[in-house]
Image (cartoon, rainbow, N blue to C red; front, side):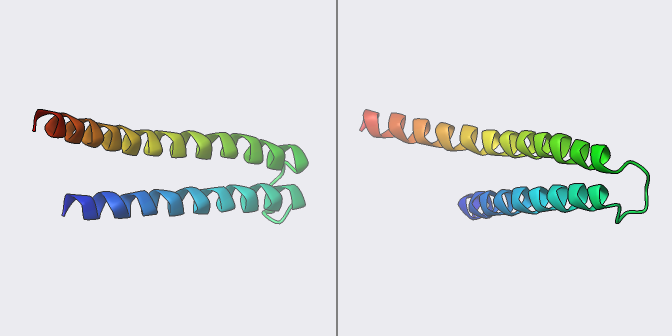
Length: 85
């Protein structure tokens, strides 16, 4: 059951990162085009693109780091079990 949740969490992380990237792209372009009706224009849209991209990279990195730690720990435990046999 644990493997089921880890497997689907990995898939969900991928979807979250893709959706967040698309949201940053759309938000930045919409702000640059003035669609939002808020003042700011090109510089604000560029700031959304830059800082939003950095945020998505950090978010994805942290989530994948946690998954990587889990996978490495699992492999190390299996290797130690097999070595003793």
